[in-house]
Image (cartoon, rainbow, N blue to C red; front, top):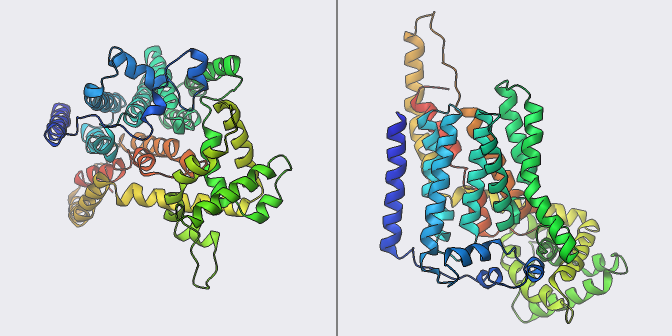
Length: 451
């Protein structure tokens, strides 16, 4: 496949999706339950003290010229995402990935659940995903041209923006430099360790700057005062009277109030109780490992109705988040077995939805299954008729960048939602964005007669 053909296919798919969105009304804005949390404008100290990062609200204010008329925002989300996909395609080609393999990575993004389901939401999910794809693209550019300062700056700004919009991407500060190191080592790039250090520093610098500013103005060295409160949702589901009794003295009163409010919510039918197992006993471990959706269904109510209700009169978000973080970490530390079961259950739910409800992944997987017999016959025929002097296969520059980037992206977007939160569908759809690249790459290799 020629590069012009691949670009034409990618551009045609974008135009098709844009037209379908227009006809289906998917370019009309839609407010979500979280929208108002991003629209808290005020003095800088108040903005940095809020439960959300002010960046998306500032962008909305600028994009609508101060009117906050969201009519064109879904189109802006969609075009930003398409631009990121095109930049990613260009970066893969700069790294000498074949046009067919680059298309296999980028074409499924155009039909991804993240874009098709969330492009119209007045929420930073799609812009954050687009910025993270741009960060990956700039990373690949640096792997192709190690001394490109423009790509290093673009990487820093894109990753910083993605993490400010969606702090779930924070593991990328370490994982993307590791991906860069792997690519550099396998390609024998000179001074790869120094280049990796530069990538690590550049990715961390914007976030450290924001955290330092927040420390100076609001007394909190975090990107946003939300992570502790978010993690308290899983702690509230793990918590039992026995665990509460073993907590430190300063945390115990809060845990007892949480228990009382949770049991009241269960009695009122607003929260699902742990169902009985085959032995007619309520087993947390059984539900966490086998029926995790029960916990996922409870999560938001426990977080925003039970835990949020424990905010003290006049208590700011910074202090409340710090207090809930202390509670969450104490529960996890005193219930390691239950926390491990939570991680396994959350990972199982995430992996299942990333694949089974990921239409581009399923379509490409079905194509791989249908291509397997044909590819096997072609390889057997070529092996019989190949002259001894011709190498079995030419060098392959496709597999390593695609596999490394897919793994780094998926872990970067999926790790925190498993260990510090509950894997909601939009988190899962963001984390599974690049997974179709794996069966896509396999299909390209099969069509070329590779193993």
